[in-house]
Amino acid sequence: MFNTIRSKTWSPASSKPKITRPSHHRNDQGTAFKNPWTSANPPSWTELLLQGTFPLGWYDDLTKRHPETRDIKVVAPDWGAAVLKASGLSRQECVVGTTLGHAGAIVELPLGGTAKHGEAKKSLWILYDPIFSRRAGPTQYTGPGRMRPSPCQVSDLPGCDVIMISHNHYDHLDLATIETLLKKFPKAIYFVPLGNKRWLCSLGVKEARVQELDWWQNREYSVQDFGYEGFSTFSQDVLLRFTCVPAQHNSGRDVCPVFKEIGQKFGPFDLSFIPIWRGGTLGFISNIGLRLSHNDIPTTFHTSPLDAIDIHKDVQSRNTVAVHFGTFIGSQNESLESIMEFEEARDKRNVLALDAQSPDDRDRAGCINIGASFAARMS
Image 1 (cartoon, rainbow, N blue to C red):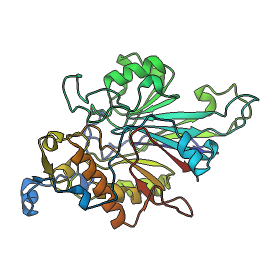
Image 2: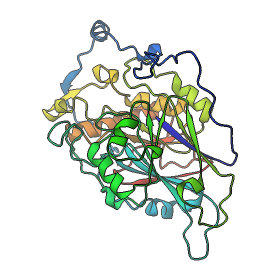
Image 3: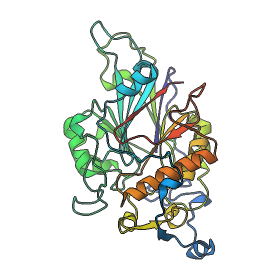
Image 4: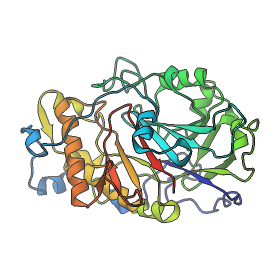
């Protein structure tokens, strides 16, 4: 997982690596890893059985639980034009995020400064976990297939300066998508966790354009590093710091304590994209008409909607857009259920909806259409 911070002060380089092996490394070579928290220990089958519930069932009439809840749809991206007009905000005071389906998103981060006469002010475009393929798998004939199409293709993107990859599962690191991005945006810089640089370089990405980071490591760039030196009055001291922060994939117990640490170190975040569902995992079950309770077996693989809201709180997210649902799934029932559970969790934790009025634009969370945008005022 990565976060991006725009600051006004140059800071010293990252601290020197420790001599002792990091707690999340299984070997001294840094090629095998583990989750160091007890929250990462999955429950045993005995513990699951002792919960007293059976994970499989039938779908009820979901609309009775939340009559006002509506499922998402796919819309053509306008990269924030409509939401900025409706809110009365300008691009230079906001970070604008657009969902691309599953965990994919693209964010426009204004760089500041004053453009020359007749030139548009410049922004940095950051792409997260993109996948535009029909299937999330080793080939386009295997792996979970899309229930909803991609809202656009690589050729439609307004820009791409940075590509962030959270981890190398097929639904987050897609071969065909990376190959297309490389052709369209050859100067993009990739940020990946340990162990993924070699693969990207084998596809033709230049080694200097791949930053491979361990937990808590960061890299710092000026706006000039992204080729914007030709534009006037960019402050020489504007710094973009990209930090690789820990994440816990498999769990099934409490929310990982590291999220609270992330919030304490880097929060509050103006805009976050947080997964709320199991994505395409076990989607075939809903495809045949059965309901799989997200509070049993699936929570050992991905966050539940309630986990997502707790993470929203822990990392001190001002605005959270839900992702990792509604794309590679088995049925519309599953899509609607994920949204309903997320809204129930939001109400339980007294979090506002994304479209709610808030004096300081904070503690809001919600789901938006695939291809839609959300504009968060920068703090």
